[in-house]
Length: 382
Image 1: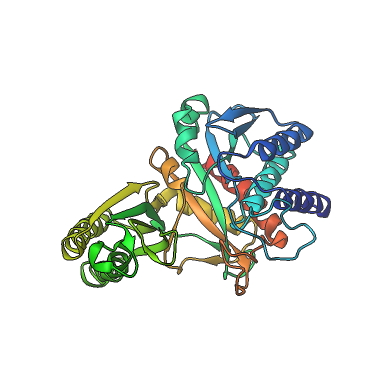
Image 2: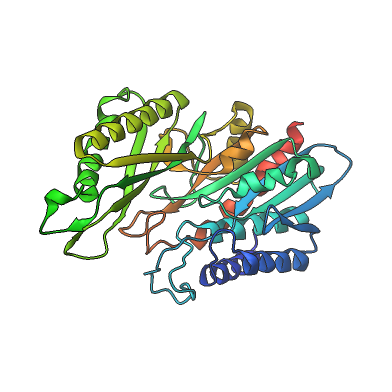
């Protein structure tokens, strides 16, 4: 990558960082990407699965076709970086690096557009709504693979704590499947000074939160991996009234379907027990989103070859993450690989989804280069 392209991508990335948009609201982000694709002279189709974009480049006569994907949405987090290009939208932040992923894919498009050494077709997928809103599912439902019949798909996520520019490729599981957990406790409201006339959902909620922690600790095989995190609790409107209703929200993560089933059964059993013990009604609602991200063997091999071609350090020893990624939905339809590219040292508050996080612009050449090389390698392998 030339210094001029690196400088241009850095400016684009920092612009995106300063103008984040939440899932399903990426209208300006999509327009920005479309403008840069037009500037690069790369044809595209917009409005796929919402604000999604697919740009396409074809070289030579080979029929092979491969997809590269980046996500575009931000998070409802208040930024605390103090950067000159910090978010201008109060309470919204690119705290997961999707600004960098988008800039990297634009960089890969620029590299491939200026490279006559390959033959085939590359589709550049700019996806909306990754952060729990089903953007990949929406694009597939909008006939992504029928309209752009790629046979393989690749993507990456920046990874704080991994040395900058290092490419980590997993054999098999990369990231966890996820589910949203909502627990509604309905009691009987009343005066705080006369609790015997009420059925207190707050007390029940406290016992429920503690009891649920035993599921992973005592029902899941210690050699398996699972997380049940309860992250929000809502209830009550006055300090001297016992509330009538409490809602607890959280997330469930696992790598294997049988583990998920064990946890779901444990949640139902525990909720029923708490309901009986405290005379309240407890209703669990668990919705499952993306599945587990699992690299296919041949494509993981191609990802490693591409890392060698960009002369990146490689890691093969990292354990899978319990974070989720809706790239998993693409992998249910096509073989592919999803890698991590190191973002540099992990600093307090600068981890993924942290208020002081920032994508490392120094890794743009590796990220864009790896995307371009994995596409060329996959096309050549066909």
